Image (cartoon, rainbow, N blue to C red; front, side, top):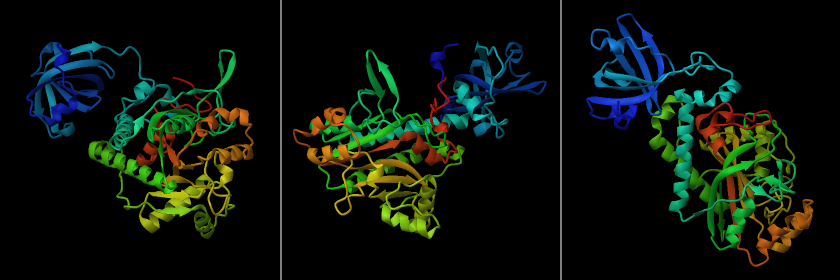
Length: 437
């Protein structure tokens, strides 16, 4: 059989072809005596192969077929209202390309619930579950859309170093590695390099790439390695300019997912609700008032915890029918040294978190571009100037006012689909206990 002639299974449902060649792995075999049904799956869907003993050759009917076998099929597309999508294939040719040689270690049909950790151990099989596969189809769509948005809006894509000589954020959540005879670290973010690009005159840059956090938290929202969508822009007036770009980019991605992955969303029982034209913005002082009214008290200069984020998420959904809210003027105590302080209250900053469905999605804001103030802030945060001097060097030859943000793509997909755990949106999750596969 000539596999170059094969079509995807989705072509069998969407084209006017009367005969087709498809290939994939067997998802299910049902033997009813004189009638056999085989469900065949590829990356685009599942189609039923019907084997009536009286209509197919004895050679085809007697083939030893089992779940997991890789086969190719050529035959006639026939209508059958009880088959998936109302069509099935009556084969003229059926060839076993490769046979499964062990029992499935996990269930891929949702008939039996498998422990998530075991599923991640066998992720290559887990992906044969259509619902799991759809998560990564959507994640790919998000990445393509975000990249397209930045290209259309005159951003330069760049690729930063992931092995660095000093911690980007702080020394607390950083992976230390041996680099020949030196101490090095895995990058916590491309932050310094985004700013370096702006100092080089590029003005609008973005990167979609891996970042590493030595997060000891074993929660449903933390990973030790994830993919971050980062951008940085020059010549801003304040953090609101960053918010505008971020809202536009996320809106662009959501519209693309709705358009291109409608069937996937339906299969996953997920819905993207319409959002207000302007997403609500509340300040940290305003958020504290909201929380206090709901019986939760935080110090004005504390970070929002997970419960506080959920309360605020519900509040904005009820008041503005919005899944998104910018929480602005974040406290200085919980922000990196390069964040610009608020003009009116130096205990607050010109930075924000974007919450999506009551969970932090993005951190962003305006950066401090005046090298003398930046130096003072580094000292205030306890840095030795020698440790950040290579970063400060970027600013000594003139730096424009600028800002940007970082968004975890896994958290974005987790919230789009309301997944119970962020590991479901990470192909190969890395947490404090998991290093394989």
